Image (cartoon, rainbow, N blue to C red; front, side):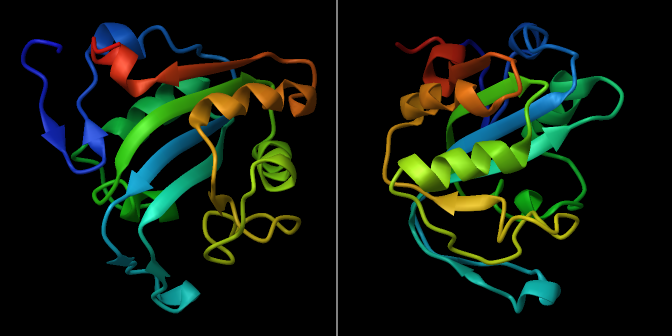
Length: 172
């Protein structure tokens, strides 16, 4: 275990040297996480949906300053303001892995998950309010996060990396 590690819901406070390993390039990422209890989400525009216990994957993009490193680090902060839909789940679940693709598209990553991971859309519109193409950017999955290694074919030439949270925390 990492000395001084704190846990807070979904978030395990990552040692900053690990976050610094993430690229500053733009791209797309997938958070793989488990919910152990049902949670009613405080998202009025989606009708206050209920997220059932299970394994999930959330696909997002990082196109702004600092790229993937900045966006993923922001999502991992336990003290962040609730801005994006995914912020409502970060206090309730347990992150298991992070995958990212430099130059990738969250829509393409979601397509691949829905096509090959025995996945479904649990909450229509979740994380995709600015996307006219996807039914949601959240998928309920029936696979191990390592199956994300199947995703490189949809990353527009970029490679995908999968980081196990337990490995980040010093547990193999």
